[in-house]
Image (cartoon, rainbow, N blue to C red; front, side):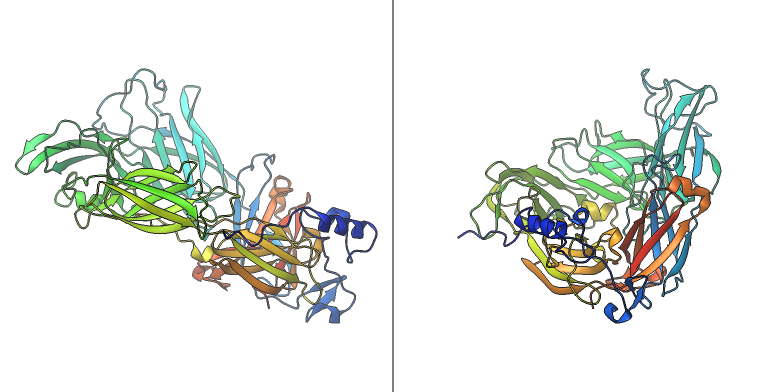
Length: 604
């Protein structure tokens, strides 16, 4: 008999109807309201009390249970203004608040003024070697010599797993000059400039400027492109066949993968004592100040050719002479192998349509010490089958089923031999989804219904990856999970990919409860039964967003995050490895807000 998922998300049905009737007739729990009923859940329970003994070790304050004091004394606050906010729409503010009173109290958030960055891109001070001028359909030259370009500002400060927004602006032609404008929070930025072609002139290569400081004011920036350096590279190839005609060579940033040079195409080789030499001339600008990861020289095959990308540190290419280098580590092209595979569900004869990613972690017939990146992404047919040309080596294979299929992305390791031109019988068996379930109790007694439950990929499992880690298949995919709402008995069931999750039980804003946050819930098996989990008592902070920007921040979304080291709370941001969201609120029109912070992480 085929195995099927044991549970799925609660569906709208008789339970919801009975809960609605009970609430409407006054037979529901205290604080029950028709408006509080959520899809699949029960009436929303409220935090209510009349005396201290009802609060499980806390205090009854204003008819609601509160913690005597909490453990979270440092918060990271993220404020996102609404889309219709004048001038600051799309600008995200992040502030760290330390030394909070553990008993709660007043909290004022002073947001720095949004910086309006305007500027222009000036050409290089000196001429540089250029393969060919830009054809006549490019941009018109400006009267003052400024260049059309796309400018991207990326904050240098990383917020421990939070998405890092980038701000992009195009320099447009106004009154004879090309200028750009961007609204950004004050801070230090990496600025990436991609010049566009100007008719009859050479296009400078993209350039990355690090440590550009933007103060809290109107900021004018004139970025003068640095004069590109010449990098003459010989790609030494020992064989007359196959040739490397049409391959491309360029320089990329080892952190972001952004292009830092012109691109050279390998043309006719020159016969040499040790084979054939392809000579390529690149113009590039080293990143200044250096910082970050190394610059990488990348040799890429033409579209449709089954061959790896070869990546070499620029310092290795220029080992003996600056500006002159050689790539001779790449000695042969492995013969491709046709691989036929199938995706199916585990313990079942069911075949599954899926997207399959195959990333080489090691390739055979490639010289030791040479970084060779090779990846293919294919779609299966209706029968779950696929055919793909691969190079001999070891692969990290991940099959991604359609959302809603009841199956999880599943990983396998394949070793592809060089001994057979055609290899069949490869199978990826997808695991059925995991089921995370529990019953949620209030801080003192009773169950909590009508609370949203959300599971996100565990922050402790996520690591930052540079270019090399990504191209060698060393990054992990983020497991997905459905949401749920606790029912009238306080129970929930979350259907999730197999993996590790940070789980948050999120009672409604008006319930008076704080969130319950459970870090690193292991759902790698078919079930994660958490039993009874209890909401922590809330610590209440009331405050204001700085009046100078309160009008723009009205209705802004305010998220609060606790710092963690691994899975444990820390109040020292310097030792934190990630942040976990613990509360959420909206800023009122007068700039006021209230945050209900859980007294601790986890359930006790």
